[in-house]
Length: 127
Image 1 (cartoon, rainbow, N blue to C red):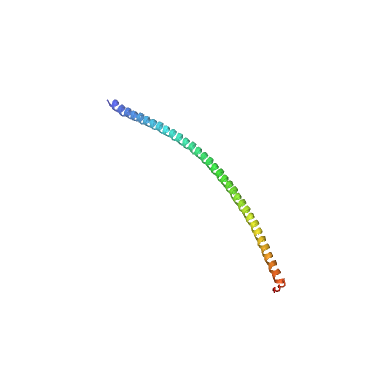
Image 2 (tube, one colour):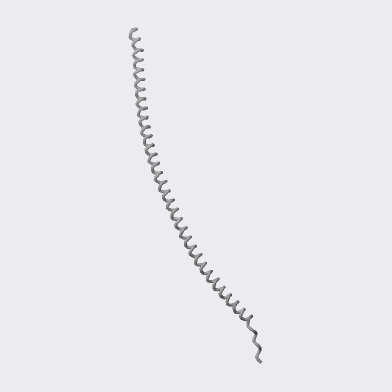
């Protein structure tokens, strides 16, 4: 009987070791599956990040293009306003020159008239 009692604890130990080994194997499998899922998720996250980064670049390029377009439009509009103002100023200057010449001519005529009146001999009153 002694042999049986010695074998039973040895068999119990082997059973415990087998169970422990099975549990370790299952834990390793679960860990490997979890690691694989994590890797897939990380890869997806990298892909999404790259996709978003590319979309960001496209949006930034569009924004730059729009800014350049607005800048060019602004320059054109400013040039149009400048041209209109220059034309109006030219018209006003022409009008001013004409008015000044008219005034000068009128003043010259008045001076001539005044000079004529002052240099003429006074007429003798008629009797």
